[in-house]
Image (cartoon, rainbow, N blue to C red; front, top):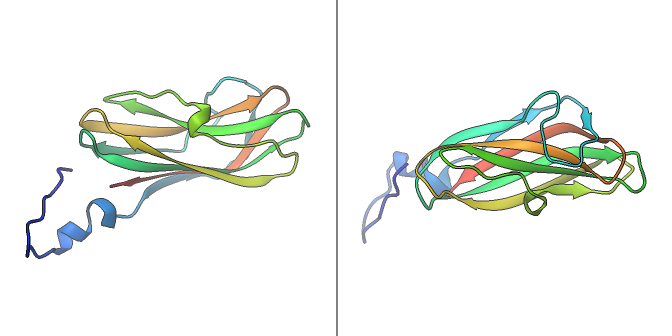
Length: 148
């Protein structure tokens, strides 16, 4: 989506309001409760959720990941991050992760700004890991991407 430059006294039309900061976030959900004991980021049995959108170079998006999380092991933790694939790639990392060390099921979210380095199709996919020990469980997983 090319960026539009508004000049003084330019009237907005309906198409302008459906783009950029005025557009709704695109989101995807997976409700299934699934677990991992891997201490490296990866997929659960049901991959995702994921969102694909076309971005222009230097365009920013706000990526939010959310899940109900639990790790029954006192020294364990659970992390939900995201990876980017398509015209460019970004590995899942703790910096972009919603995380908890709770032995009770809690809802956790993290919002991260991402700037496209290349114009084209970008896929944002949720990735998961456990910390240290135990099995990390995730349910009602959501990824939301809002372009600006």
